[in-house]
Length: 421
Image 1: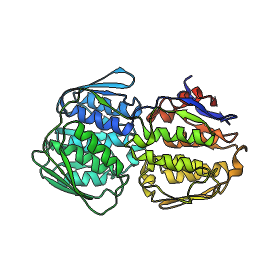
Image 2 (image 1 turned 120 degrees about the vertical axis):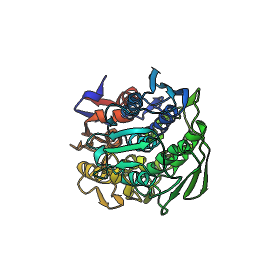
Image 3 (image 1 turned 30 degrees about the vertical axis):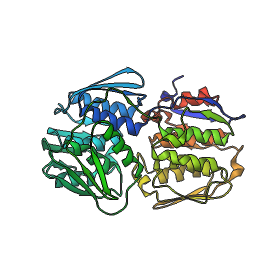
Image 4 (image 1 turned 135 degrees about the vertical axis):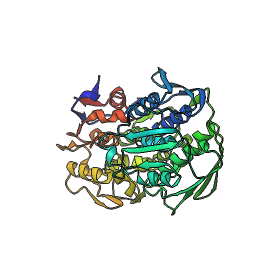
């Protein structure tokens, strides 16, 4: 059944443990990195077990608009054929609300010859990109944003005009990843220096380095805030396997735990390199989750954990999560608002914190909560978990999950979860 077109979706509480097996979608983070680097390599690359979703579609369509062949021989495979460079498109590149695609392409296009406009939907136009644009300007690129958010206009002679740049990555590690991935296209060794010590979700930089090296890059981290990238360019990869999406896995790990079930996802959390895999240990602690959870390195898992915390035995405070305010929506406020729809004063928020007061008595109870998802896939999927334990949870705009997990509702239904359009 196509649940994505429904204006709303209600869940009936589970009367038995959820038991079954699923094949997770590929990692969005890895897929979009690999798509870009394959497009910057001369030759053919095949990406297997990749994610097919709105975010990867936006990246693929942008690459197609710049002369790269991107085909999908199967739903989980991309075939990328490129001359090793990107050509000037006939119009702006529309990237929806895909933060990875927007930021990674912005830096990569600064190494290509021409004028490019990187734009997105109304939500992407509220997400900050000024630190990256400022860094490109210091590298001699004509880069401009009128609002500090997309659209961004980039005019480049075909490469950076300097070999070293500093950037503040406190808002997003994607700024570092974007510049690192552009580094091998420079004419000589490129140095990226971090200002300050804050990096949102450091683990994603490790993912970036791993994918870069797979496509032939040579990059060394000199210390905690300095990287040196050699001018190797990129080489095609005949077969590149993408690991399952750890952020998507958190919903299913949580569903398993909340219902005392068993869901075989075919992958061990400890084997995954994505930062959100670290949330598995916290999920396993439910209903005795720790009183304080530092969330800076597991940012996309925080909505999942926040909903679980609503049914925990004791209150949970999430700290170090200020960056959640500049995701697809303000996720701190979104989590707080929607938890309070389930029960008034269930949650409270501060600038970089979310406090969930927890009420295990909610399990088996009733509510009339219509969950506003703010066009944010993670809010929709996280709050669906509440519907496994309570009657009356309705998810508005369930189709927003297509951003990263189009089969989410079908997968829940296949596990026996009762969904009502």
